[in-house]
Length: 450
Image 1 (cartoon, rainbow, N blue to C red):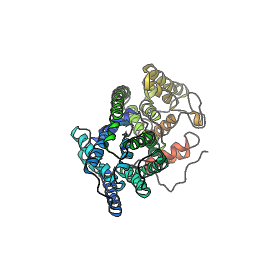
Image 2 (image 1 turned 135 degrees about the vertical axis):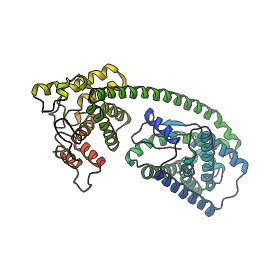
Image 3 (image 1 turned 90 degrees about the vertical axis):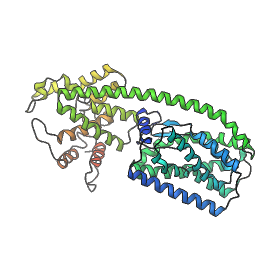
Image 4 (image 1 turned 180 degrees about the horizontal axis):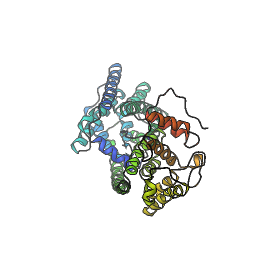
């Protein structure tokens, strides 16, 4: 198993996260990430070496090592991209390796296979050579499984070994999860909760392959040559992985088209009103950060991004003398202004697809937590969470920006306003996440609904 985290809350088919993951693997890691990955690699090498020195296993056949390492490296080439990273069917080879080689040597062999696969990817232009440190730390899963096999010292593989193999898989998951989550959390700064959810899909795939790996170990009967039975299955999986990659390529292009359309619409807003256009981009950045803190799913993040970018698109239909009036609006002018959320929804629904989905977020972006907002008077959780995030981020951005009728507030005053209106105008949970994102003093009491 191998993953490379990019963003929490991701789902297996998210083309945006796949695109970011691909780009990330082609670049050297930032300094903090490199340090954490190097530490994980060093600790693994120390632990794996200690296991070999303590157990002093018999020397294996070099031919067997070469065949199994090559088979593992070949399985690594079958990458199923999964949102923030990828998963590979190496469990099919790992379980036979635990039976056919001295268990203490398996983690070192696995890292050798990872290194071979990594160098092939570097040659193909899919990895940056500076990411070699993460490869040296990708044997933690094998170390967990090898410890179980070292302690139990099983004989020839049989179906009676089911409990043993499941125990080894449990250790595999624990060791890998702790190592990868530490790297992602301390190296990449990702929240742990969403990372755990996004890792579940990867471990589920591995678990489903465990019986097949045990069956191959039983069929091998202590010999290495029968491992060749995996070749047709791996070839079939490679076809599926290739098809998945092509579908994701198409999805990425479609996502780019939608994003390009949204940016074009955003440019139209800016051309019509410079403040509104710049304000919308500021709201997007802040809203996505808050959505990350709240653990939104990928579809929610997509709607949030487009909704935040285009939440003011309906203002194109608002007369300029109302939009730029340097004094408070009268009742009739407010009635016209409040139509912009409905007009925005109608515009986006006319475009269809993902932008149409964002239309409901645009429509609800001025609803209030207590039900006194517009246009539908929704209250509490009846307001889409994406719209609740947009509303709080929109208000903060507006308060901290110069307007025709007043100067910008300081961040401290704007935060105080958010807190004062949490539970009435804004969702208290959203305000708490927004204040945390802004770096407000942690000593302040958590927000509660009024």
